Structure formats: structure tokens, C-alpha cells
Image (cartoon, rainbow, N blue to C red; front, side, top):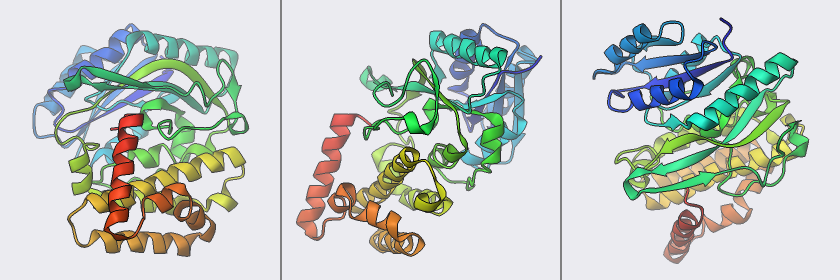
Length: 343
């Protein structure tokens, strides 16, 4: 049967979490034959490989297990993409899950596009921070920034608030578009989801936004990649991802659509802001020098991108000199964290 969508599930030592993730997709789709789930075992050393094979045996034709040597999250995402047979591709991390009602709605829409011969390169939906340990949830929607109930182009998008960046959780790409982007994912590196949510965008000509709370993003686990202490520890990887994004485009000469260019410049500035803030949180004496080099390399790479990022409000506010300036920067960061609930 033709597959309307492939769900790639990167798994590394995911035995404790993967069942809920997989079950949420199966139940939300009604075990439909036109979906597929690709479980990518990224060199796990727990029960994940056996569980993946058990799921494949239990749901043949819907679930496939792929085993590979450990390469990190980006390599697992790419492995799923290589295997995908669906018209669309969506990544669901193994400790997250999808809402059943919202998934059913999305599948009806995607099937409708195909039946009517409507090409949609990027399907966007909302996601929800599930802060399980705090018994709280925070939904991130795009209804104030994107048109609804129509296929649209980048020239019709509105303004994105700081908490409204299009993240991996909210994106479902057309598979051929995503493959054509040749994603520059580094191995053994966290935060590659930023590359996934940034590099393919100029290749997406037609978009559709569904105002549904589809993706449930589990947050709060100790050691999670977005945990503040973990981000400080892995700051070198944040630098690596930001540099890849920087070198992907000269935004003001290679991205023609003004509103998309403005959005991507904002996203990239946020990445530079994260590097600047977490350098101040780090005790590693090498990090201030690494940050200066990153800014210098950006200036060398693209003077206009440098000016926009460094001398805009965020660039100035997160690079204040002296100890007093550092305290102001960190105070502003923690205030923003409380307001926008992004961590």
C-alpha cells in the first residue's frame, strides 16, 4: 500500500519510553495501512534492539526496525529519512508522543491533499511541552503568525514571537523536499534539530498550518539535552550547530523571500544569543574565546548577518561587558525563561 507518511523514531537506549511513543502513533492512526513507523535503533545497548524487532513482527507492513552503529540523533534522523516510503516524513523522538485526535486530523488532511493533487511541502502543527514532573503543560501555537485553512507561501506569514520558532516538533516535511536539502547533520552531536528546522525552509514553496496540538514534547527529565546544566556542559556542540547554520546561507543574497529571510535571521540570531548566554553560565575558560571567534567568523562570512545579529537588541543585550553587564544578561535570560516557558 502507498504510504502517506513515514514516522521516524530515533532510539538510543529507549526501552523504557519507546512503547508509549509507538503506541500513540498506532492508536492515533487507527493502525492504518497507509502509514509507516521506522524505528531506528542507534546502536543501543539496552533492550531497544529486541523491542524494535518485536514491534516489527507485531505490526508487519506498518513498522520497520532499522539497526545501525551509534552515530547520534542526527544520524538516526537521516537513517529514517533514507528508509522512508511515505509522501511525508515526521520525526518523533522516542520519549515523546502524539495526540491521537490531532494525529487523526492531520492524516485526514494529508490524504485530502493527495486525493485533490495539492502539493504541500511543509505541514505545520502545534506542540505541547509536557512537564510531567511538575504536572504542567504549555502549548506553543502559531495561530498569530500563520494563516489557517489554506495552502500559503512565505509571503503570507506574519511575525513570530520569541517562543514561536518552528521546531522539529512542529514540522512535517514532504519527503522529497527534505531529501533534496541534503541535511548537514554532524554525528555524535546534540541540537541537530535546529539544522532540521532551518536548512530545508527555502526549499519549501507551499505550506499548510493546522491549528492542532499534535506533538507532545516530554520535558523535565534529568540529563535531557535542553536541561540548563546539560546545555552548559554541551556548549561546544551548540557552537558546532550554530556554525553549520551560519554557513548554510548568506541570507541576504541567497534567500529571496523577504519574510522567510527575516524569520531565518531571527532564528539564527536566537542561536547566537544562546551561545552568548550559555558562555556566561559556563565555567570553561575556553568558552569566551570560542564565542569571540564565532562572532569574528560570522563577520568574516557575512557582514550584514553579523550586523543584524550582533548589533540588534538581542545581540547587544546578551554581550554586555563587565561583571555588571553579565548579571544583567543572565537576569534577562531567566526572566524570558519564565515569561515564554521555553525550558
